[in-house]
Image 1 (tube, one colour):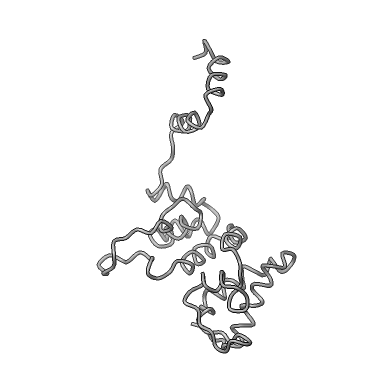
Image 2 (cartoon, rainbow, N blue to C red):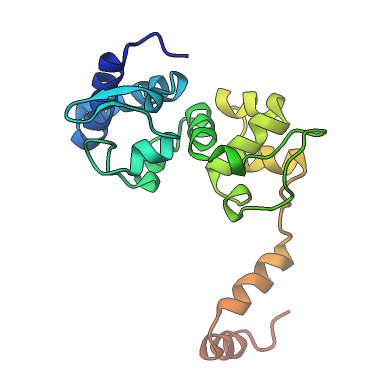
Length: 190
């Protein structure tokens, strides 16, 4: 939990969004600042000028709420900036997922509704799932010795397409004219 008072929390939140928006040298500081915002859950208690003490329900509210209460930013843009920091990306996804949509641990009561953003092939989802289900592989990804995609295949929650599956996939995307042209150009081969 945070060791900052509400005024300091507001200053750090403002410094973080300024580093993101500046886009020059400050952008290098952004991941470290964002990590501090997430680790200390600074959205929960900030002294916002003109609004008093403000507590937002989650990081998503801080990121997307209009300025002064929030940053007024697109989460996808922030995710793109931190994409190469596997550990931060996993923390980001966890903090951005509302508590009611998080997966319950085995034996814990919860609903059985699947929210569409709980699953997927995004790097953020993959890292979050590796961190939760296969910390050994997550450690290899954060160390840079294994890609998130290869770790997901190793973990068994993603499959690797065979060459014929790739051909079928891309063939289906071709127009009728493209298929005819390819067949004509390759007549008699194979």
